[in-house]
Length: 151
Image 1 (cartoon, rainbow, N blue to C red):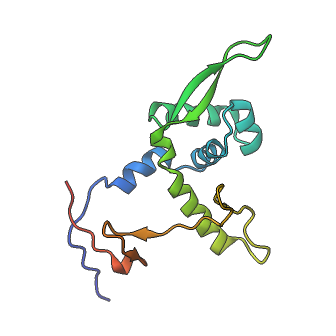
Image 2 (image 1 turned 45 degrees about the vertical axis):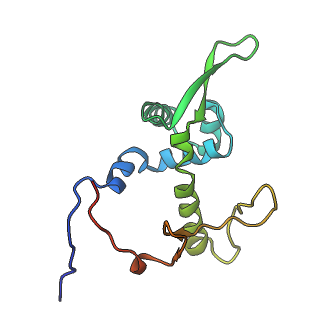
């Protein structure tokens, strides 16, 4: 058996660094809910089913990493609490979640089809994802890409 030629090895690459922050099930579910407009701890817990301590730890980490920010609110007669809102850095993860969803739709949904469809709010068309190079050419997959050393 031959070995694959790898021109260089990147230690602690961007994928690894990103997974250090978001590479855990509950983190992705928290982000999924944040993208759906869920902002409050109790609502996130009810929807995701995450244990309180786990959810609290994930929210704290996402705030510490700058993906979410806390915004105080107070219901009448209640103590002040925090809502969790996406930052620009957090919103930039949206294509990653959409890619995971589309992969799951394709390979895990079964005969009944995807449980959720994403549509463009302005026109109603289904949302698709495409890779393009900086010159605008569509990139069909990894065989059309060459990795080169960065900084």
